[in-house]
Length: 73
Image 1 (cartoon, helix red, strand yellow):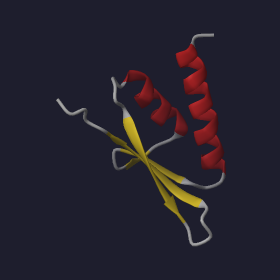
Image 2 (cartoon, helix red, strand yellow):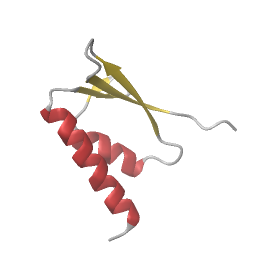
Image 3 (cartoon, helix red, strand yellow):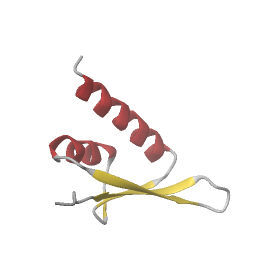
Image 4 (cartoon, one colour):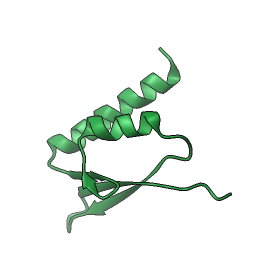
């Protein structure tokens, strides 16, 4: 199995787990499913996306945001 494929499968499993826990996920400011986020990662050139974790008062992840990061030229 190509390394990229395993990486995307691992990412999907991680995000799917968050979704099942009720974690809100957004991609570029819009609600997104694990599948949509993984697809965006697959087609995006480097550097990709930065994750922003939002925690609740207990320290659990309540939201996860993905924003595209521009590479300095």
